Image (tube, rainbow over all chains, first blue to last red; front, top):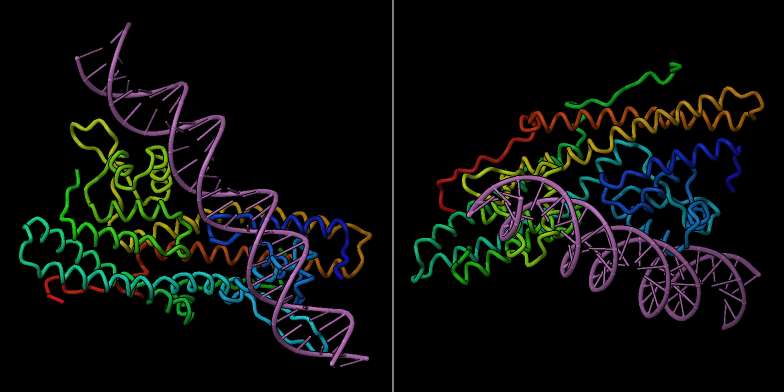
Length: 185
Length: 185
DNA sequence: TTAGACGTTCAGGATATACTTTACAAAATA
DNA sequence: TATTTTGTAAAGTATATCCTGAACGTCTAA
């Protein structure tokens, strides 16, 4: 399916490998990154079998990887006439990938964290009502409550950050580089 | 060292555990998050032994964990008169922690990625000079070059985002919640 | 209705990661 | 200087993660 000039192929493989190297930024496994890079550079929407053969891995792994990427929004299933297999396409815009990835993860923790903090606040308030509390404990409860309230404020700030990115308002403050695509660099 | 009201202790432990639960957002191990939570809630600067006993882990692990957190900037070594052991203090501002963590990881990948992309660009340009190239390959090289240039632009945008956060300019656009600390909620 | 193709799930094995123990080096104390 | 204390490095072990192959369910085509 993908026959390429040998030398070109070699360079491209290096590009893809290097592009998938950074282990820290994204908390993604190496496979996910490689898969994205493959789809990004080969451009054509792919089937699971294509991925498996390009990455030399099992189809089951591809299935799992694709599911994760879809969950985040970095990959979507596309429909192609006369094709039985499922076909997938990667998000091709770097900025959009960045936004989707981080907003997904940021958002993912806001809800559970908020509710667990609210619960802790209730519990601490209840405890504070009790009669036989020493002064020291009362003070500690107060402090922890402060921290929890701060935490709630912080989470709502994170929501704001998410919105800043998802509405693309961010680009008003940090504009995309609009390089002249025609120029020979 | 840390003797607390039993019930309060119980609640606090739950707070700390829940606070460290979110596995996805930070690409941090559970231990790092628990360590931060411990230091955050216990407030007092701690020694490695304190941490080890509070988390029920070995001192060596604490040493490693602390090193990582210092690297990111989330924890710093403080000096205390008449104390032989090293003492560490956690960043107590949630917003600052967010900024330090993400900017650290974002920044960390910009430099290596930029240079590897530049290298790939050079290699592709060299290949493009060769005589015996078919048209198809030439077109592919062009496309990959486009992608690499796009990638460079994207990375410089990320630099801009980092700056937005580190300069705290972000707070002009997404303001912190300034809750009235005196009110009884 | 059947046969084959496709995607997914599950149990097992392999690999990588994190933790502990032991040992060592550096610094402080006596 | 000798001794103790503290932090780190190294090696081995345990644990969690990821990958594979086989089995299953679903859908299409005949």
